[in-house]
Image (cartoon, rainbow, N blue to C red; front, side):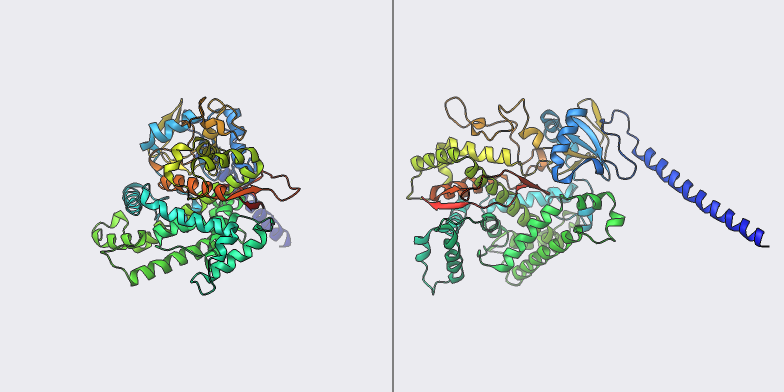
Length: 527
């Protein structure tokens, strides 16, 4: 009896192990067959089962790893990070896909992290098809009506530039504010900054720069700006900054590779959802406030215009004119308008303290063309080729979106000698264009001469595409160009920037969803 029982137990054990082995072999075979490359698919490293190329790529240096793969496999190759991805790391392939065959790569892929954040695919950035076309058209039209790309927006940026310069430390301007002024808190904030700036003490410019840039977008979207002392708004900006960083981390990569697991386990990826929930709650509050005092005949900003537009499109549900989509569209405009330009300007000040000779030449041009008695204006830019070249070189070397935003093939498409199947995620890297050795004389060096001809006139370069290209090109490009020129020139008009005594400026970066400088300090001395 005991012998029979033992034999039964043994057979059950063997059977259980056999089932596990069979299951493992079945899953592995299924995975291999599923991942088998179709005919004429771009080559790439041999991926490991299930984990793909996750172990080969350091998320903190992903743009550098992709460049190394290109050296081995060519300017078009494939990797596996949760799904198959075709990487275009060559300017000619990027242009072919995004510009010449842009219609075939106009869609965004479905990425688990963003799917869980936005399951209905609302907004402008991650929507596709008819809804995307209607929302992009409406956003461009509305922002243009409020001055995007027009001279009418310039005074708002100039005013914010003045606030920013004062925050950086003009004691005489600060003294003009009386204690019963409506901006008492702002006066106290400036007074606090003077302790650091006027006395020559180092400070971190990041959070005040973020606030200033964000305020320009906030005026367009929310109809108002936020004081630099607003703690709630400062907390919001810090959450945006951390969420953007975490979205490029290994935790986000793991989430996209194994969403069914990562949804259930703790970790820093949870903070992404926590931070974005806070930002979305803020946006919803602003929408509620706008709805309560809406006057359709006199729209104040993007939210008012969208609320008025909802009535016109109520019979066309697919166009996406509903309040939930308004929330995500506003959220995207707010975040994108804050993070990218402020990161570029933070790179700009870092490059100025790293290369003081460049700063001196910019200031000499500012003094010659603008002087010290008036604010810079966009009309000055054609007369300031060196400053314009420096700003473009800051964008090139800053390289804030090295991987670009992912696209998806809407049908089988040939790029070069390879076929990219329908539904494949595609990364047309911007760093491959901005650092192309055949396009730039000294691609790894900060050199404003890249944008100057032999006579010192500004020259455009085809390989300069920090705003991406094609049908998904950044819709805020004109606003960003205006902000970069006015903020940068107004700061260098008023201050000379230098590193803290005894500190050698470092160009070390922090790679998240964006490529930004590591926190640094500088000294701002009034001119």
